[in-house]
Every structure is written in structure tokens, then in C-alpha cells.
Length: 94
Image (cartoon, rainbow, N blue to C red; front, side, top):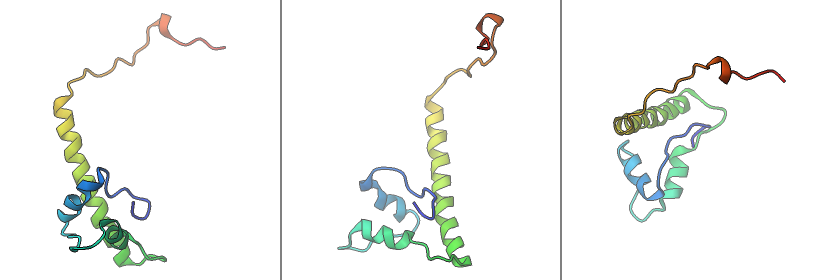
């Protein structure tokens, strides 16, 4: 999370690959959790560069999520739900 926004969702062991795609290479002999805490921290009160930093991470996450959803959607072929109600199915007031 970064300023209330999700910027990564997945297995801990895959986080280094995710952030590497953004050019955020965790230094050798570093604890990845410490590194991510540092790069995902936001100073308050926020300044324009903080907002830009947040946007970079959230845009990357959103684009990655859209690709995953599209890939999953290719496997799922469900008919749209029928949301119409017949007279006998309508709820009756109490």
C-alpha cells in the first residue's frame, strides 16, 4: 500500500520481479521488505513530487491488473446473469 492505494498484490517472493519491471531493483544483500518500505513511503504534507511518485506506482499496478483481468476473462466464458424477475419471483413487502 502507498498512501492508501494498492500498488502490489501477490506472493512475497514475486514482489521483486514486480518492482523490477518498474526499474526498482532491490539492492543485493538488502531485505526486500525494508527496501519496499523505503520506496513506498510518502512524506506528509505531500508535495507535487510525492503525488507524481504515487501516480507512477498506482498506474503501474492498474495496468498490470487490467492485463491480469483480461487474461482471466479469456478463460471464463460465463453467460451474463438474468436479472429480470418474473411476477412469482418478485419479493413481497413484509
